[in-house]
Amino acid sequence: MNISVRLFLGYFLVVGISAWFVLDIVTQEVEPGLRQATEETLVDAAHVLAEMAARDLAARRIHDGNFANALQAARQRLPTANIYGVKKKSVDFRVYVSDARGIVVFDSENRMLGSDFSRWKDVSRVLRGEYGARTTRENPNLPNTSSLYISAPIFWRGELIGVLSLAKPTASLQPYIQRAISRLRRDGLAMLAISAVIGLVFSSG
Image 1 (cartoon, one colour):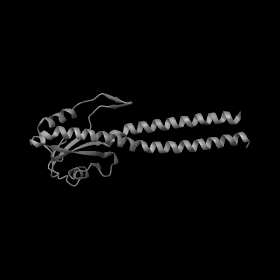
Image 2: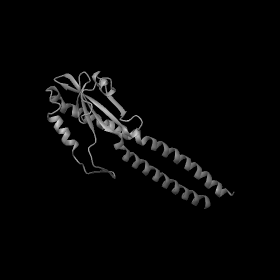
Image 3: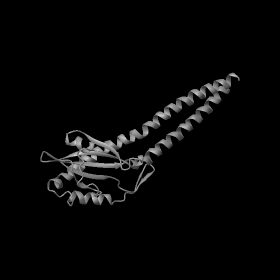
Image 4: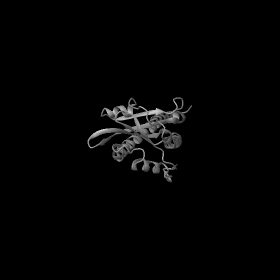
């Protein structure tokens, strides 16, 4: 094996291993990073919705007041958003409101009314004055059925009267995660191929 071949193989090995480590690290950070960004956005949205729900909850009209009607109308919308190549065609969120005891008094999907959520982290922590969040699977055996729940306190005239929880299915994030990972892998392979060509040119020169 002549010196040129050995130089090329050494160069390609160093570049290849470095590229693989960088690509692996970046790929592993894609999903957590996207989830963290989504959580930050949900925090803002939950607090806005909590303010909107306060009057109806205080008036005991959380089921049929302006808040419930607005949520129902929003869930029926059909957005035509193209987000970096991923088409969004539905409004996917869930909202439930618990009273000051942690009992569900409103559920946008009408599934958990009357349930005691006082022990769920998203509700119990907010009732204690802390930040409340949790990730829970609808089906414990299926990872793609999990949802991220973010909660915010509902105040009326300075008194804590309930908790609003906003849920987002994590499955809705998968198209963006897969697109980012596919692009990273494609660009990584292209970079590796270009590096190999450059190494071949210099080592044979």
